[in-house]
Length: 198
Image (cartoon, rainbow, N blue to C red; front, side):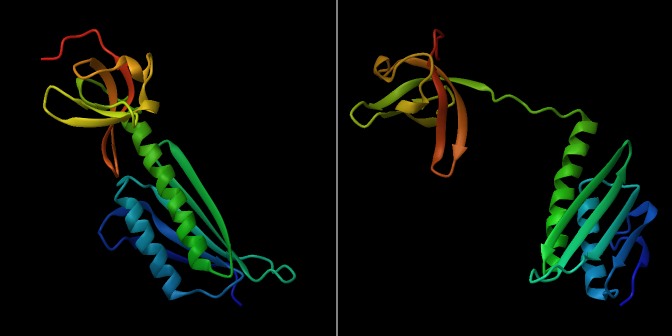
């Protein structure tokens, strides 16, 4: 078995060149064209999130075999972007492609976070909407709110904050946080409003 085999790859297939070539290293196992191709594709995918990747080093490792535990594979990714060094490590028993997938999924999340931080993007607080109750089913504990633009939002008894469900009736002005779920538009944190709804 070959140890420490390295492949240096210059440009990704998309034509984006890193400042340093992509480095793929195999430890404890033979070099694999299929694995190299999989790594290249995953790095190209990462470049879609950040076109200023300076360096990327991927180590694929056949780890020491433990008694009756199969062959564990490890994948380590070291990625350099301006001002940051990102590292992802994953181990999978007997399937190097699972370790590769998990390591690159982790790296993608880290890279997205780093790009957001560089742009200064912050988590935005949900915007509060205003509306009025247009339908109620007190027995079942739910109702609907209509906003001035005509959109309707479902709410249930457990979505009321700062008041009681029984205080609401058709025509009551409310404010709420909108959420789109699989079931449709929903109103969360519904509270009585003292504003006029046009």
